[in-house]
Image (tube, rainbow, N blue to C red; front, side, top):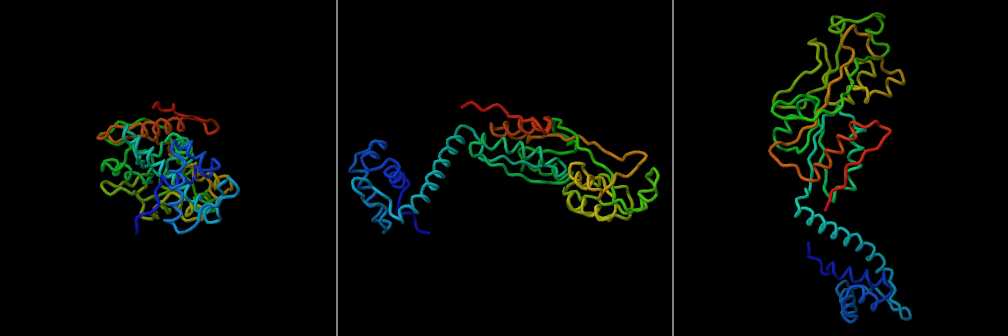
Length: 308
């Protein structure tokens, strides 16, 4: 790819001429001589091979080609300015990226609200979001490829900040044989029926959390797939209420009438990479996650704006 012949400074000069109504006005804004501004634009047109401006009376007016190129150049100049701002913030210790890994059972609604609030405070810092299941979150944290982790497991060797709990409900389709028993169910009743289990995405020490030990089971990769299976009568499962609210409301799923263990309420925890000091963007994101996790869904929360 050839190097650009026209510089960002030349595009900025053309923008100043158009936005301020002429060469003299642009020269005053740019603190340059009028002849310098005129030469810069003339040189641009020569390099590009197309006329960008025409003189209408005493005013410089864009040609059709100039109008198209100027609109595209505004994006280019704006992106360059953003890069410069990002470099400045990085020089001050501001991170270019925060790596966040989240257990798939954690409510998306809370996470989306936190990330939405983070965007205007991010100063160009990106968030790299990764979803895992069960011990997969722990693996990513231990590998040092996550700055922040949200997990429903107690991870040994890490101090976690406790977040809210997530309610898991034992459910099956209304026509499932377990519901047709029309009585309170026991552990033995469940063992003879197909259970849908979420595969642990961890590689080091994968776990079968919630599996009852029966030979009959479907093992799936995601909570969404598990909900789809169970909603269509393919077994029973413990699923997060926030994921199956619509199916419960529509009657596609019914809670199983278990004598014990029909609901589970594991607490979730927020962990950070203990080998790496937290940067300002990471700290802001953490406070937002904690705030929105604790806040009712009909209220707002905003972390304090960072000082420059």
